[in-house]
Length: 294
Ligand code: IPE
Ligand code: IPE
Ligand code: MG
Image (cartoon, rainbow, N blue to C red; front, side):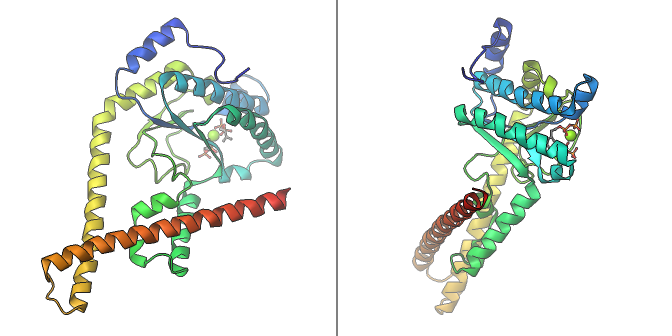
């Protein structure tokens, strides 16, 4: 039987879900699932049991998300820093992850798991990939931009999260999705992760809805600014070209238009070529990794 689909919402939960769904809903929600060990201590159970209940809570939370029409969920399950915990705890978490995630991923297509992850590592890796592209002659240095960096992140296939929730009362991001959450609604809740309830999720969504228009405005004006900056870079490139061709800085307007179109098209071509090469490079890396660990 499916782990996620089993069990529907109660009548009262369904009723409230329908009211909430009348407002703007987050399409992508990210969770920092924190507080497992404090929960274990509070309930006088083994630490591993706290982690195990944490994984079970994820399955339940995904079911609520499905019922609420949230199409994508990203979870922080284990950070690179977490390797500093005792060997016994790390081994226990690895065992649980193997067991529980394989079951979850069998039936889910909307779950992204960040495991052995930190955001600064992800961002610096994306910067290194772009430097590699320039070194290989696939990119021009002027192609390096925020929008290209977006495409080099592990999350390049997902939209940025609309809502990020951290449980356990800690008010920090612990190096999670730092780049992707600049226009997300951040909600910090005091409940420990294994005790997370449908009502906690509703409260977080209500907070998102209360901030929706401000978030939307900030996102739109950021995208506008990004487009403006790209246009400015292209114009500067064309001006330089025209000067090289012996035109005065503004040059002939038809020639300027043609050069501008050409500049945009060739940049797009370079970027597509680079992204394909990057995909191959990553696929080779994973293949080698699988061969080594087999
Ligand atoms: C989150 O709970 C799970 C992981 C980090 C793997 P913690 O293990 O951090 O539990 P607390 O925050 O110490 O209670
Ligand atoms: C953050 O939790 C990572 C995960 C929830 C996987 P931690 O409990 O490890 O974070 P810090 O150390 O309190 O910042
Ligand atoms: Mg913690």
